[in-house]
Length: 234
Image (cartoon, helix red, strand yellow):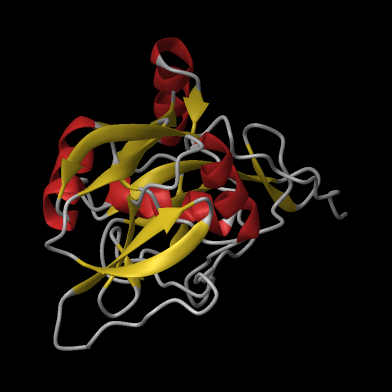
């Protein structure tokens, strides 16, 4: 039996914070990581429009999380770009970062001082070792739910949280239905996006989904009685 995939909106999972104090790119990155989650990543046109809509009208430059070898601050890959038409591309000997103005991107030397955009996600890593059912109950009592990961963008944020875990795997809100024979998220989303490790998931009763805290950070099917850290959505 297959499940219908819905269009997932992610606005409830992150929010953008505009910082008007001017800092160089590295200082901006440190500020965002200390006070929020990270410098903002802009992975597609929709996200770029969301950032553009948040910016004040004056054409000033705002740091985003893209730098040097064109990776994002959270180390995820960059494929989408929105460079300003006829913009200058700087000497590769300089350390280059990316600023946005009115939705258009431009290269700037990282040592320059600009306003910047942080983002804040609604995820929390709980460093307590619990079974899957215990983790689900904890998240629903103290936060919102055990995290669902229906898109690649959400996978990036979950990976970032999982890196700090004290266990080799971290529970996700993913389980297998023995009756209906499919995997599903606890928020009732179907499995439209997946990131399974080789040889997974398998279709075993009383197995639930976890993400590797290191290595490739793929998903694995594990017995629900294992005791692991877990990620809640707030």
